[in-house]
Amino acid sequence: MSVPPSRKRARLADRSGDLCRVALGLAGAALMVASLSACGGEDAEAASAPAASASSDAGSNQSEDSRSSVQLPEGFPEDAPLPEGATLETADVLAAGTAWRLRYIVDIDEEGRVDKYSKRLRDAGFDVSTPSDVNVTGTNDTWRVDAVIRPPLIDFQVIKLN
Image 1 (tube, rainbow, N blue to C red):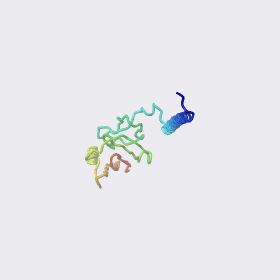
Image 2 (cartoon, one colour; image 1 turned 90 degrees about the horizontal axis):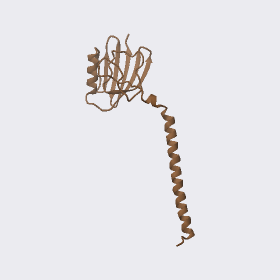
Image 3 (cartoon, rainbow, N blue to C red; image 1 turned 180 degrees about the horizontal axis):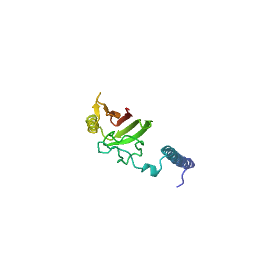
Image 4 (tube, rainbow, N blue to C red; image 1 turned 120 degrees about the horizontal axis):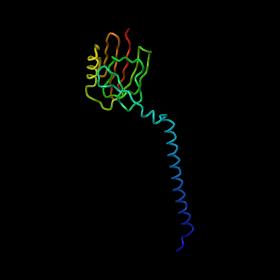
């Protein structure tokens, strides 16, 4: 049985349309991959670099987390306690040797995080005030530490007093 010419043209048009859709889809996917590769800017070595995170030792600022490649700035004070269970996202030097700004990310919104960080400051010898339910300020003879704790972000500023 032969297929009428009009029916053959319809089948051919359907196949052409399918091929066009497949070609457009592949081209779109290739563009997305290319643009994501250009934006990423990280190679495998950089992505697997050691990360900075607060250690469980109250007076320490050693790295333990493998999710970030951000490191604490050189000269950051050893006696400024950092938050537990948080990943360092950014670290800026505001004034060399005297002022820093850090931003941490926490995975969970743990109840009492402000109280726990206040205790870490006290344990490290800081006088502590909590002007609100998200702010903590600690001072000792050398440093002032201001923390704004609003999970998933924790922002710190450490300033040398004298």
